[in-house]
Figure 1 (tube, rainbow over the protein chains, first blue to last red):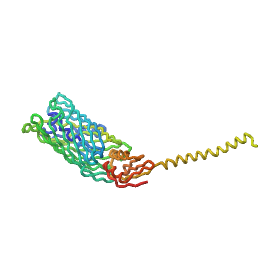
Figure 2 (figure 1 turned 45 degrees about the horizontal axis):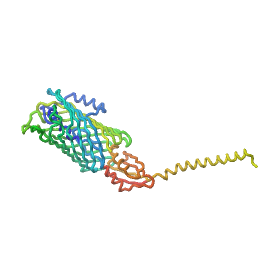
Figure 3 (figure 1 turned 120 degrees about the vertical axis):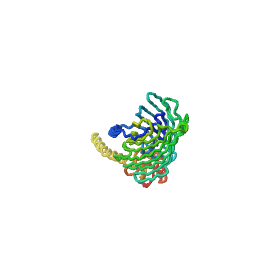
Figure 4 (figure 1 turned 180 degrees about the horizontal axis):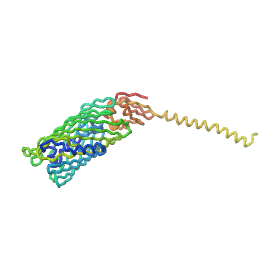
Length: 310
Length: 112
């Protein structure tokens, strides 16, 4: 469950995520980066914002409706990397995490995620345990068709403020946050389609700081170029469109100017699987944004995950 | 009285007649015994099977059933072929529960 991963982070990272500058930006360099990544396909690093897929294929940066089978366990080891630059600031955050999911029923799963984070901001750096995330997902609708499934699920994740917020830069916000949402999807032999809406509510942290709540909307399409059989390696390509809008932060009830705003990302994703092993990765590339005040622009967000289920 | 050399030739001829028969019997035995030992085959038509990665849950659950000898998945046909050990059987109810717990739906169940 990655729904709350971005709710952690240092002051500036959070400002970038939850608020910011004023004008709409579509940096041309991002298109060059996108072209290179699509051509490379194997280069699959990224950052996650969503509730990633369990036993079946699902989106990487947004939420999918899939749940693991009854009694099934899935272990994920992931790496994410993100960078933001501009307005005289430079921030970078890297994280590795272990995630464990368990299927209580075929429709209901629970999960826990344990991250370790490295951060650097304007010459300062820190590292340590990140915010632990616990989550659950319930698939309330599933329609099984020959070679395809339609499904829908609701989910909720809670981020526990386990990261140290007193480091420089802070590794966490020191506040709880809860993310809930609805995801729908179609998974066929050839084509994939997903959509979701998520809302993250942030609690109030030390010194009365409350990060602005965030709304996420995502649309995803995917294709399996070659219809492989069970004992063959399988590849699926996806393209996600991720939109997020954050309210301004508040400190002791006072709204902070350089926070809040919206960003739109285009995110190519690749899945490679063989039996119960999956490697997946992708990059979120910002294509438009409108951040309030003085905030650095997202440069990229990348995620790579290795998954094993049994 | 036959000479010793004639007796030897005679025995040798008899041996050449017996050996092919024994070999034939062994070959036939090799062909027929496995067939007799091979268990019942079931074909499970499963709806919702969209990818190999997803199908692993069915494999895990079917392998846990006592008596299952081998499995063959044909994802493009939505088919799981289950071969049982000699004397073992798989009921439709068992198959339905397994497929359901793995997150799919059993549409067809045929034997043989």
